[in-house]
Length: 138
Image (cartoon, rainbow, N blue to C red; front, side, top):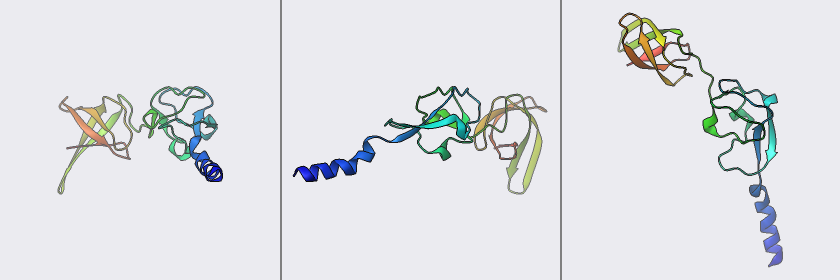
């Protein structure tokens, strides 16, 4: 019986503590995370990121402090559009394409929805950031 318990403890041991990645320095919001900014830490923290591929190249959404775990909501894809950028507003429906200039009222990465002011009409609309930096409106 004691051998069985010892065997179960050995099998379960890797689950008891796991490597997570923590910053080596303070990473401010809007900074891009590099591989040299991270080190592994052997602790178990629910929800903390442990794969370098989940962090390297991502943008910090909040300040990340040395030795503290990084959670999925703390990072995201780098912003393509910044506040006050001049962007192309694109409306597509069927074969119709309407394009005009706008000014972004927020920051956003590809796929995120941000608010934009149409420079012709001064109307504020929401649209999805495209990978080329244009904003697709509905």
